[in-house]
Image: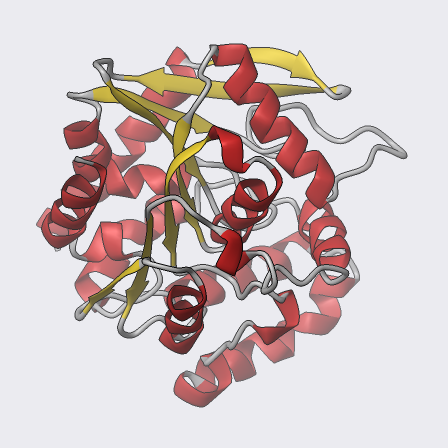
Length: 298
């Protein structure tokens, strides 16, 4: 118990450090917060978090990997529009897939990088696939981790099959949550996050960090409504850059079969399964995850 508490505090300290060292720039009517770490001749790696509606803080649970990679390259983190330390959405302001692609490309341009490596987790996996389809000329290598399906509605959730008692508790909170009850929203989110792990010990250590992450329901709903219009499946066979597809064997948030289908659709892609992980393999199997990333990125 003490080890878990210490780990949680260390991860929280990492989050606070990130908040103190970031910068901002203006683009497309919003202010985007970002942080760059490391240096070297390796192709810069942009880390794109999931959600939609979360800030980037939770990806620092993977700092064992990012710290290793930043020895040879620049690693870039950012908060997507409307989230975290980026500016809140103004009344009438859009937050759709095109905005997200344009913001990411604007950050690449702002930092002066012609070609980048992209890592996307969960919803971020969908976003990096969409970016790669739109701007393949700027892609060096692509990593898709526990990603939503290329057609949003094909994403396969297993929560009700694996955690029926937990989803029943969520259902009991829906009425109050939809009426704007903040406590109900917080409790429902905590229940959701608790189902993302294979290891109870890793879950307990990570939960304080995950619960510190910002979640903006309006961003989630706006992006979710827009991506429903698209089907990226016809784009994947066009990818002609090295691609790595990752998944946790026990990912309840996105069934591993989704990752397998993405892998099969992208010519020459590599596929790695983390056998003791759920939705966040970089937090549950950091050594194996780091090895896979270093081997792929070089």
